[in-house]
Length: 294
Figure 1 (spheres, rainbow, N blue to C red):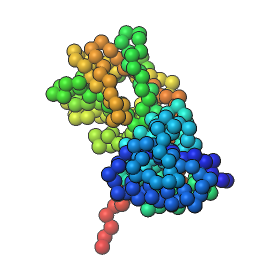
Figure 2: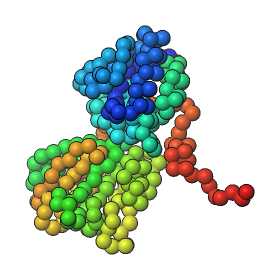
Figure 3: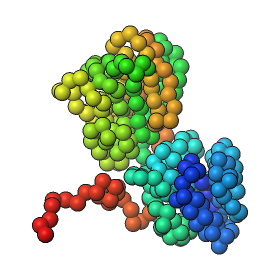
Figure 4: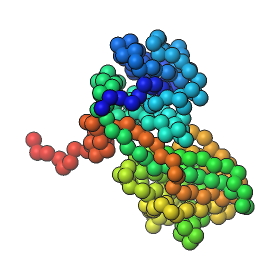
């Protein structure tokens, strides 16, 4: 199988990263040898690229056959939001730290591009969550997230106190510094740092993880959103901030509420043959098994 990718968009935001500059140099050198593949970089990278790579507006990246996200997981999340609604597959190239969403390292980028050209790859879809904010029956804001919805107090000195209903039934009341509702993809992000469980990417579920809860009996909870909805509203007076994938937020005022459901949209990631989630866990988290005797 030959590559279906004739137009490749490049997303990157670490403009002071030497690894990003090196990665762009590698892409440029490869592109000169393969003029049949067109590379277009987001215009914020304009000062870092050279021909045959060209700079384009973000809106032009919607026309690409795939996106090459060069950076950390935050860059991959940005690419996912660019791809939203266009079903554009994404390949992450890690120049960050952990980089759970990255399939390639900079030093292996040339081989990765060769493998793409040869068709030596597969794709995997990741679930997303639709988030809708309501004032009465009127929807006042919508977002789709790949990682998580983070509910935090609008006033930083306060705590989050929210009621959660699941599929029309009251579930519980959370009182904590904040509350995370994470997808399997997001389970290895803030959720993991907050003590939540790692969920395999193919699991159609979300995890509710309270951050520093006031009760020791409150623990992370894994639930399905397939054909089900979750509703969350404040249990006390005061506004809450809803943070979407760590990128943007809206203020949810008193009397408003938020609903979450499994999105019909997915994020499609390109997976190289030599990589996989289980291997990534061992590599990224340093899992070595039981101690070995010398």
